[in-house]
Amino acid sequence: MAKITSINISPKKGTFKYPVDRVELKVDHGIVGDAHAGNWHRQISLLAQESVDKMTAMGVDGLTPGKFAENITTEGIELFTLPVGTVLRIGACRVEVTQIGKECHQHCEIFKKVGRCIMPHEGIFVRVLTPGEIAAGDEIAVEA
Image: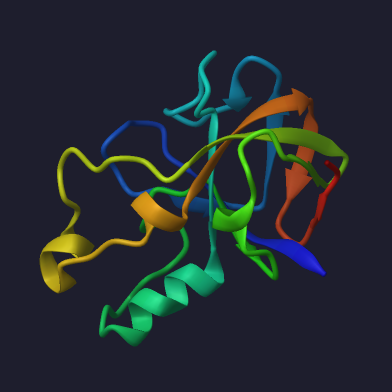
């Protein structure tokens, strides 16, 4: 079963995100209280713990949830293989995959240390289709 292992937000762009227990998802917005929310195609970012583990295996220490600026850290689902347009159910909410990876304009500390960062290749972005509240531990399922 795929699930949320951590939900992470930041009040200001350019800072690490920090874990919270639960958040509200809003249509045409994303996560209420997160600096990256807004009416655009990258409302929420997701990254699998399995992807984070790849970076840990390369010698990067201290990779806690939110270090890659991901809003939702997952477990049990290979996110980067989902095609754009895939609909996911997260708890009672529904989101649609809008983008796989993203270009890094400024390399993060992780890239500077090992010459690679996982988020540009294995992170995904979604927009909210059905609003509601989600929490760490909620199940994630592919709907379509």
